[in-house]
Image (cartoon, rainbow, N blue to C red; front, side, top):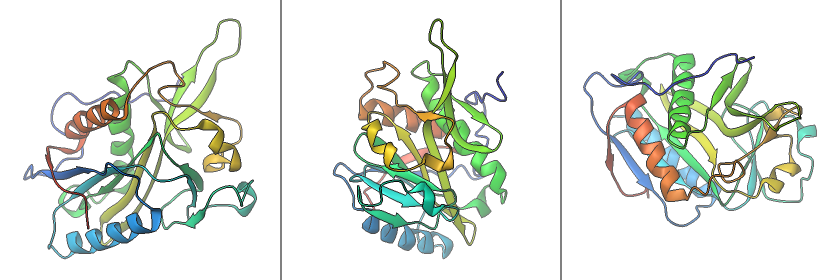
Length: 241
């Protein structure tokens, strides 16, 4: 049974700004080291909070690595020597980042939107669900399991749910950072070094694993279109320094 399915909004942005100001949107072509990305996010979040910079969504890929959120359990790091492991200030547990996975770091000023963390997470979920819908993939969310899931149905076999996108955020002075990761075409075997997000009874999947030959550029276009529907308009910008 489905618990809840989010459909992309068709009218006003559900988590937009009253002034409809554009969010800067940038894509890094080359993989970005995790410490460099965190340092850039920290600087940008401070600038947004102080009114020196606008909101930003930053799309990138990382080299293969594991990150530990604030709720990570040491026992869930199954292969500690496989890839570099970084502690992260975001919510959640262990997750994997690597080539073929689109990471989107979301730096939004919730004071100018809604000071409501649950509504913000729901908006992030709606964003991903809307992007997946552009490839005719039904993304779903589940109570108690942050992220976006797809139900896999094989003839003659029980259906199963696999995670296709993870969500982990942090707020500082009501400015968000970290964000979402969407599996486009990563090496799914790399997830075996951790218990992803602490969930053992479900697996992980990707757009390509679902039989969809989606390129990263196509995934980016879907994410951009869906973001505008949920959060408001965007404008191209260079990557943060």
